[in-house]
Image (cartoon, rainbow, N blue to C red; front, side, top):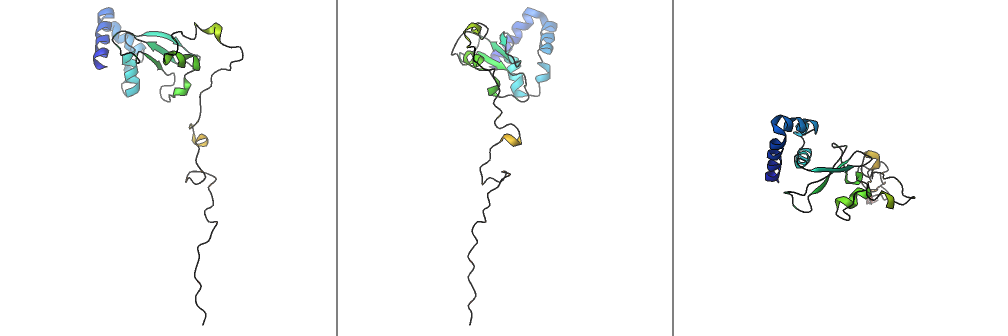
Length: 159
């Protein structure tokens, strides 16, 4: 992976020159991604890749077929890179990402059923009010009353 990224950087420097490569890196947010490892890996991987499309949320879908292992040559760059979630990918793009189809949603637009609803991200587990806790869990606001039974206390003998 690192060797392929280095090759991509060298190819970009040959093509655009050092200034052009740095300008492109700044425009793509590569310099601001130095602190986030996942974002940095994505940004390095996009060098030399082609932008296939974007969805309604703003996620970018990339493909790189040269010097990349099959099965890892399609990926998504989430619009909300600080709070990304796999359910933010619409079903049309999910099919393209997972090699179910080679056609992008723009190519399949005519096949979309009229009754289809717009995609909505799954919000399970987001925020304290959305997390499920069982009845006995310590963080459940409606805790179970475990004092249904009282412990048996032996009576003192009466003489």
